[in-house]
Image (cartoon, rainbow, N blue to C red):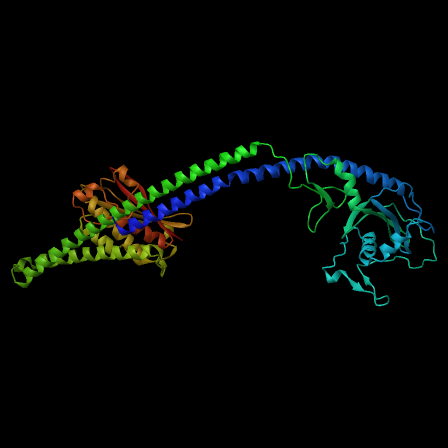
Length: 522
């Protein structure tokens, strides 16, 4: 067996074994993964069931506290006295912060000292009173904190006072804003903004997040075991509006046998079957492709050997006869002409093989020639026309009037090679026509130049037309009939056309002749 074929088979065998091992691992971990899927789905479902009840309770509790504060606070009065009787355990106290200072109800002086002793809290309240969208103090950002040079205390944010003259009475200036909440570390504030004649004030409630969470836990779905309610973590979205709190599902949850488990099982089994079939298909496909390539390579070697042997035999025989002076004088011109034709044939074969090898390695041709469109085409056709006329063809070249004013950028040598290969095919197959003829016409497209190369030969059989541009593609008729060539001409011609930005296609082929169209970019 060929060494390369052995390596290919070994590689894909290992690949298949790797796929089988991977499938075995998937099957072994399937139950765990399915359980996790079911667990997450069940947790989400139970959380979704719990949220409406919890949020309804939050709304009820907050509404009770808002009712104690009333429509508006007593701005400008010396005493701030909301109803503090029967204050629930999740409320730490009430506050009113005006431009003149902080006020709390009687008996909550300790709360006032605590708030004033936390610059991050009181300065955040001040800043949010002026701008509710202001950020909460963040100790990790040095720009959030500055030092007051007079008091040497840290100050957060900016607080603007509209009228610093506090000898004038302070009055409300507009309606109070809606309540909103925020938190800093463990302190949760539920507040609203109050516009006054001296600037923005803030009224609110300091809540105990832990106590409030205890009040809300009975409303959690009982099946959601291990659940917890607390303040949001950093960059963690809240799900208990309007408070910055989150209901988290615990690890303990009862998981029923859900449809997701069965669906995952089906998906895994389908993947296993698909991967196995795909691996086998790829393996056999590559083996088939490799076998076909090997067969074409063998045909190519056989064809090249035959094509080289014929002219070399003629060279050897004729040169030996010329050396021994066995050729009559009247036959010398004929022998010289035959040697010349065989050398041209040999040179054309070698040129095709070398050009195909260069294109296969990715060496594209340039576009070095520039000139009038008909003149460049005629230049590329000079040798081709002479060769066709020598073979007995009538050659007609016709240029579209619209092409006479066009300037073409292309590679004339590449064009000549394409036309030469098309002419060789015509000589090989169309020379048997009663009056062999070649018609070459140039036409201008939208942004291309179209060159039509047609003959009046017997045409290409329909079953062979799909493969005529494949390298080393030769029909059994060519091989048995000893037709010259190795099956590279048309494949090389299309590759050369594409390397200069164009294309070569079979336009038509029937019993009235064959036509190829070469397109070049303008």
